Image 1 (spheres, rainbow, N blue to C red):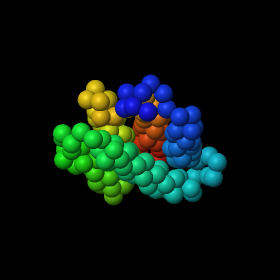
Image 2 (image 1 turned 30 degrees about the vertical axis):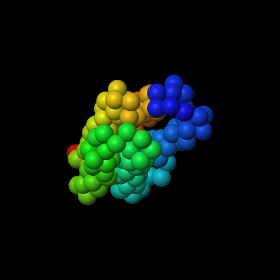
Image 3 (image 1 turned 90 degrees about the vertical axis):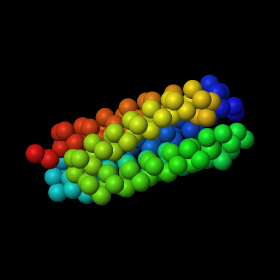
Image 4 (image 1 turned 90 degrees about the horizontal axis):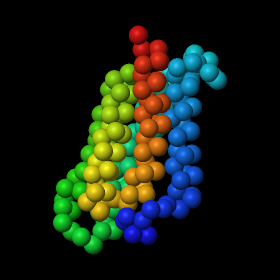
Length: 154
């Protein structure tokens, strides 16, 4: 598959969609107390922050892998540095925690997606991957923002 290929394997799309389950489940728990009751809201917040940090680190790892697989060494240093920034930013957001941490996680996901769009214009990220990430990022950010604004953070 070339970097600009217009399709991804079905399993990539299935697994990407499955990766949204924790975002949605935690957001439902945080905003409604369902299904585990209001006492589980704190653990759900922690789980959402942790899972967000893991996913953001994974997205940085994707960029690392793209750099390693690219024969073009132009901008390699910048690309390696950029691939590590998401993990550090997500760690900071998890440390901050609460509503601010959730908002920071959503912002990090949006910035990563913007970078991926730019990177696709440079033929450094497959456009089909970026297209898939559009929907995944929208749902993940919606879950984070819903949790931040409708959760018990008054």
